Length: 496
Image (cartoon, rainbow, N blue to C red; front, side):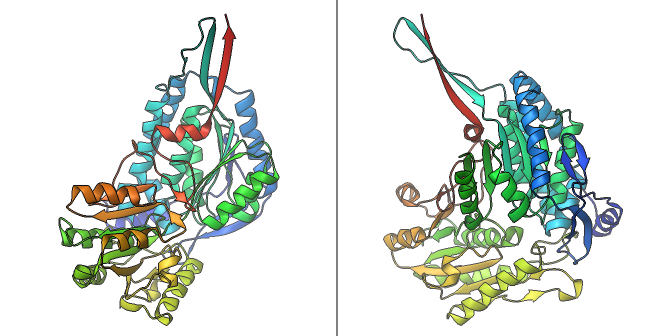
């Protein structure tokens, strides 16, 4: 962590010059002149006027990416040269790490410690991972009949549209952009309208790192205009999206209504976290459950928002989480001591509060939090919130809240726990706490989730894939498997 005090971060924030132009074909572009205000959830103040892009700006960005792919050097570079360019970009991200972390913290409310130590570390590591992987991929030559030679080659898929959310604006953008670039594709990145400023900085740094014009373009604007235009564009070959399941459905329709582009979706979650009575350390299980739901203000698609705990230990675990909720330091995102910052904005805070009100009216028991806080700051702050006496039919247990709201459900036997865990339309992640090796294997196999953590939560690195099942989406980010989304397999049969 960069050793700066709260006052020093405040001083830097006041000096930060944030620009809201699109970044197209290697240069900043104002677009058609329409703008919107990027507002900080920290205090409700305007950070910058951001270019409000639509179809015209999407067309310009896609045209630049198309030229760069069809006639430019990027897809034709030796993979090692592409890798070196990505490593230069990683070095620039590291060099500007404090500025980028500050931008993320200001635009979406993440504590500065998390922005610097977690968000920026992930972005830097992602570009380094794919920079080093770029020349490690191999083609195939299957053994076939003696008088023929068969070649199976991986070729870059073309122009990639990447539409990413606000909760991890640089991490998730890096998960899409880095493997796409490593594969030889060109990219049009559309960040959330709530977090455009860090993505624009990423685009400028890519140009500074020497990526040719048009290889990485950034278009800002909202989903129904800029996002829709990218989704429908006939010159976009692949669409990679992270966000809500409802919006993911729109992108599938856009593909059907345009050129049948491939669409890769990482969508919502309502992740179960199962604590069995034989958990190796109940206090650690409770502490990790609390961290998992309150980290990043609960704005996590993988957040373990459904805690499924055995009846015999339910009250002990719940009390420990309630204590932690009361101790958690909610405060200014620019204070390094803050553990939970602001939700991304007033509209989102209102939606989370509506879930809390519904939970109370449906009969769940509020054990902690439940109200907004720090109202004198002008920011969008919420108390860490815990409900128990939740039943599976309640809205609290069914819908993704995307906030620091935990629902505690109980079970009496393992079969009931697995049934409760799988009783959701989502399948992104799950947790399990047990000392029994056989139980760990059997239950992790039975859980319908793309990732299962056993005796931990949110652990892993770039070597393992990330993605969901069911209505949590398809395809995988991270690991070498991510490259499969951005390449096409070509078979060449040579008769000898």
